[in-house]
Image (cartoon, rainbow, N blue to C red):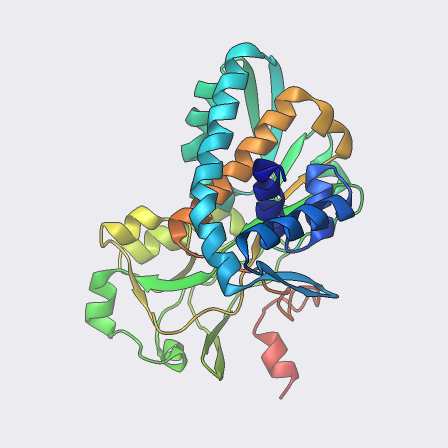
Length: 332
């Protein structure tokens, strides 16, 4: 058994949550992936995946094994990239369409590392919100948050994020920290309008068997393009903000933002999606950037210490109701 290849197939299957998804990513057959993963399980004496018609899921042993071997594989990938960069130059430009939340949350900080590896490649970073013919024209790679509808593009889910409710220490000191999500009705919250135009004012939580959705209220609604305004106001003590758990980590580490309702989880886990046309994968410089982005989000999950499974789209997403909370009103 080729142990290194088996580990690569195992990690790809875990991330894609299916043998077929791993096969598409690795550009091999589904039986080849299943056969090598099964051989790995046999050599370890541990069942790594639970198989089902809908896909596969990691067992407890599989999750532990992934956590143990993923850092070593990531270092190996980085070593391969550094060596490849020293012997293979692929000059030219890669046009990257990226949503602001992804660019600000992690990509901007990582771009100098990519440039250090591949100084001959130029990155043309463009604002991108929705998968439309107009916005995809001339773009090589797209990074999109949420549940895009795609037809002619290769679609890979890289990771997923959960929402955290937070405010400044001063705000909590003045208004009190909520102990139950329903108490958010009495706070100034700062909802953001999605790229599709819906005000995301329905904040959902779960704890054990209990599920709660709260229609938050505010004097201000903020468009997706100005989502940093919500963060700035929260830092200034003007209200409560809902952030993804892999963004603005420095604000939490420095104590500028303090999370609330830590014993609750958000059932909404929007995925980060990598989209590209099949033809660009054959362009070396684009392939190098794609591999780098996959590695980046793998590192984020390792640093977070857990793998978050993307949730299904929220019920309000395709209804064009104007406000997410309108879903609750319609059910009354």
